[in-house]
Image (cartoon, rainbow, N blue to C red):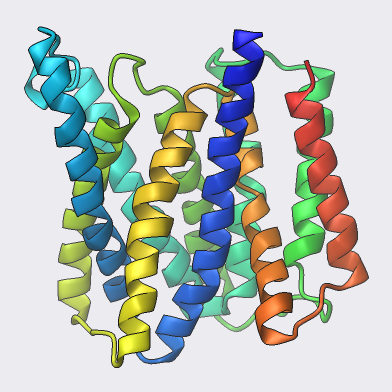
Length: 303
């Protein structure tokens, strides 16, 4: 019973992250449309998300230290665990950077499809090859349902066109998918004695520092009005602090493939939010995709 409850809560954490990221995608699109550069927005997301994460980390560190434990302290971690946390943070930042670079060359549709649909395949292959989970008919069936469903959700009805520089754009898009897979596997393999909030605070600090370098090289831009500032604040607190913490907590309690499939609700939430807020109704194709995605999660969660 306890195991089932833990798995349910873990699914809840991963799904919550997907929901927050889905709404955040629309918010980010609005902010960038108002003139804020993508790299600057990414920097703002990580930087604004850090105070809350560090507050949580420091607050929980006090009772842990008083109890004579040091598992939540950076200096006590072996170098391999530090490298895992730093690598996960770098992958966070470079995932976003690669996705934006792909969009620059071939527009938003194709990089999004590639990043979302390829990541579960990469995670499943690496998880099985590294022995993190067993290959099974259920895993293959869930993966096929999830990929088919999310493909129907994000695929434009008019199809995808390939512009002149599509080869470079495709390379950046596949890089984004690979880096997102690293983030998923990094969180899934995070040591149990390292609290999720501590790992998230440390890895996001690394991501923010990298984005500071990239955004400074490109030239910093700022929100242009109060609404844009509020939107940027949402992306920092909800889609970064809360979403990444929820995902990090849930991912270490699920298989890597289940964790990445759970976050595939992101494009579905974005589509539903667009239908509610911008009068962009869901198509029959997207509805079918939602059913397939839901079926994939049921297959993975079934005990």
